[in-house]
Length: 113
Ligand SMILES: [Zn+2]
Image (cartoon, rainbow, N blue to C red; front, side):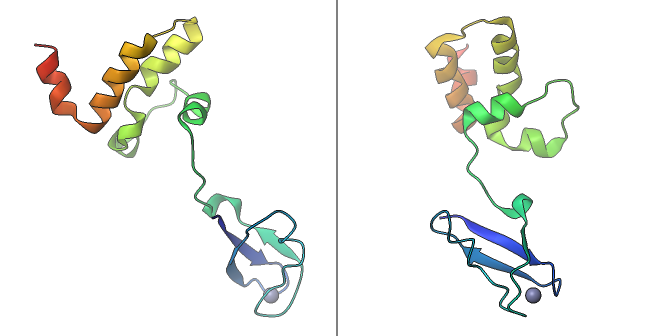
């Protein structure tokens, strides 16, 4: 269930609201001043990002910091992106290996002995 954060343009107040369905946002008013001039703060919403989305937005040319590599879901993304760009299908075996690498790095090192 997405919790959206809003900023009231009338009083600069910020508040959160649980939006269950489209359209519910239309009748929303600021709890501080009752104003309806609201701006949704999109960046604060924790969207679920799919693997495909990650891949699509992943730019291999920008330098990645520790936080990028600290996220295990990003492991192997560079290899997949390259493969996608070259039109190479890495196959199910690669996916399996990647999944292992992300969840249990020790087992992969053992396997490749
Ligand atoms: Zn307000």
